[in-house]
Length: 318
Ligand SMILES: Nc1ncnc2c1ncn2[C@@H]1O[C@H](COP(=O)(O)OP(=O)(O)O)[C@@H](O)[C@H]1O
Ligand SMILES: [Mg+2]
Image (cartoon, rainbow, N blue to C red; front, side):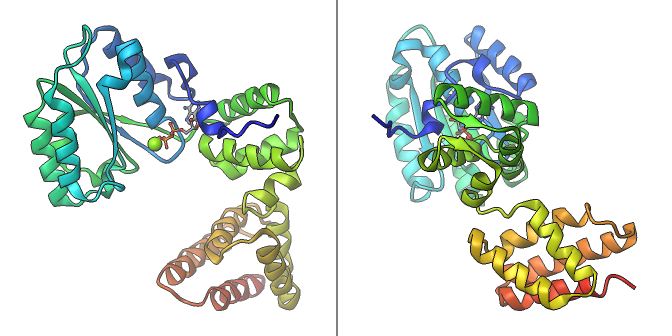
């Protein structure tokens, strides 16, 4: 019977030792939990690196069997406005914690989606319930969180997982799910994940639905990510002056992998560094990528912009 549980939940860390690649953070947070004394925490960092997982581990280790009664998870970007957050927090904080820990935990995810005013309200809420509740806030960028909130929290900056840890996670899933993943495919998974484990596990799960034998090609085709060597080939064609074929190649890659113009720009920008042209040209092409990306974000026609970028590669060689 094929399982329907989503792998990101199936492989969610259950204990501190399962949270990989964030050792310095984990050891500090673990010490708080062992002392049963926790300041407010702010977890900052990109998606899929263990912020929510660590918050859950804290709750489970601190409260054991009664963690569900003592842990409230809210998503700032889901809840319509800070008022909803305030009401839910108030309801939750009104009753005492169950067990021997004198506080409950409120985990508020995606705090950087809150407006300044909402954050001000959050700050007051944190102050009001400081005797009975500890807040764990998560955000992509700590710079988007008001200083007075940051200064009330111990701030931890999560990083994308290093390659070694991503590969370890892949190996674990491979064994558990009886997959066969060759080394090139593992490398590809690391490239497309950029250290985001949620992405790794999601791509692996979609790959496994197609074939238990996972190859580089399968990974790239399901990840909305062209093979880096194909992008490099297109750029080299352009640099060699064959603009028409480069343009054809680009369109082909775009359609085959279902890429948006923005996906492509990101990949092109990475490949510039692997071209054999002199460094000053690389710098000016990367600069151009930035400009084109900005125009696309502002709504310019994707294909016109990509062509303009390719034209710059074609005239890069003289
Ligand atoms: N540091 C990590 N160690 C092990 N697994 C991880 C780690 N970070 C993420 N994962 C995997 O990715 C999934 C999503 O991670 P999550 O903690 O929700 O990320 P975030 O909250 O930072 O976006 C987890 O359930 C787990 O399977
Ligand atoms: Mg999260």
